[in-house]
Image (cartoon, rainbow, N blue to C red; front, side, top):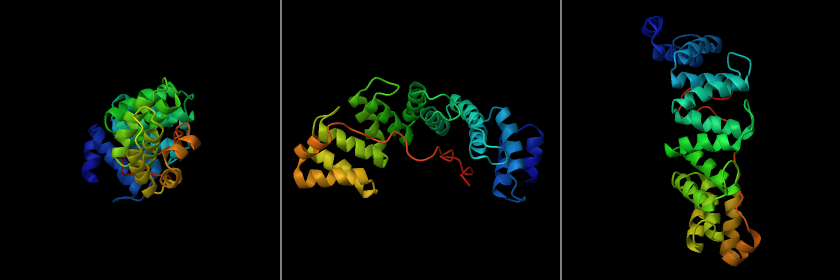
Length: 238
């Protein structure tokens, strides 16, 4: 703690960020989110992307400060502009929800594409959803299959479900009951109820029955709350 203080006093942003982490976690000092916020603000103001993203989380969850979604979006956006991949995912989510910013699916697609191209699975799934729904981008099942395929390979259950359904319906890919069953099965094994129902129908009544019941692919665009803790060790909702 002493050496971080010394370094932070000399203007080292990374040291200031570490002090914020220590105050947030109560490591070597009493837990104090107000002090944590002060150090994150200093480091963020110096342009440290990790601090900007974390500061966004502090505002989002109201840790050490009144909850402020606009400030959360502002700081997440600054980190995203520096190619901080988790911030790109979060700001995409905020544009989808219209939380702290005006709802804008095109902006969501822009930020998710940046994160998806860096290999972040939730962003790949989200981008696939936008292509599947035709929101913010022109509907393109081939692109949906591409991005869901990348996310599915990383274990994203909803992407596995979406990809399985594309194979079942022959949208964006050639119809293939074996691959449909494989991806639906992987998703169902993770507890996805939609995948389990589709897989049961496929196995019991065949692909024709599945196609008859599901003439389109519907995958939840986003699930649960916006989370700032991907890749960051400290910010979690309380």
